Length: 253
Image: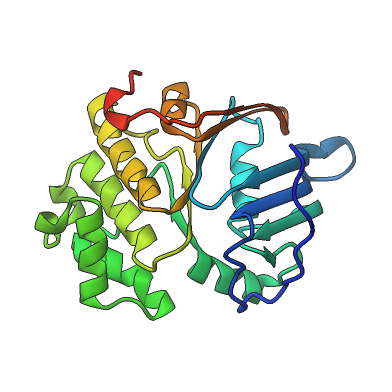
């Protein structure tokens, strides 16, 4: 898959170009260790994600899915190649610039919910949103409404089901209104019915215009994606596109 032309913006505080692809990886590679201990986690990957797409990354453990997500999320830089998000070159950001980028541009959803047990659902959402100056109660409540949990705002994590906790984690990720949502095994710790509830939430966010990049081992999740990228040994092996993604309610695992 060939990326589009090089964008020029490099400042972490500069707004992205609305006309630009949401994400571009251009020959992105990541190597850990040296010599005999060298591991090629990602090998010269080219990938373009369009605004408003849901793209699912499929593949076995060690295929490079999470490494790709980490590069896009600004958690770590590529060893070689380039990463461009919303028209901004993030490849050579220093740690301060990457922190600014993560706070303002990307929402993260992980397999484990990582909620603060002594805070209510609403307080958990506000806690992260406050890092961007968007931690007001109204914004946090709106995020909980978006994931269908406004009526559970005053409940603590121990009073919520696994699916509800994951939806609080999603609300926490979207409370700062990031254009890009990165999900790493968002249903991996959930049973079938609970996982389907989370998929409904992710699809609803995508249909509202948010761009999603989702890492999973579960091939069933591919049914609701615009594109499915299959990876193996740090490389993209196939890309499948559909014009009409399925409905989360019809997913069979």
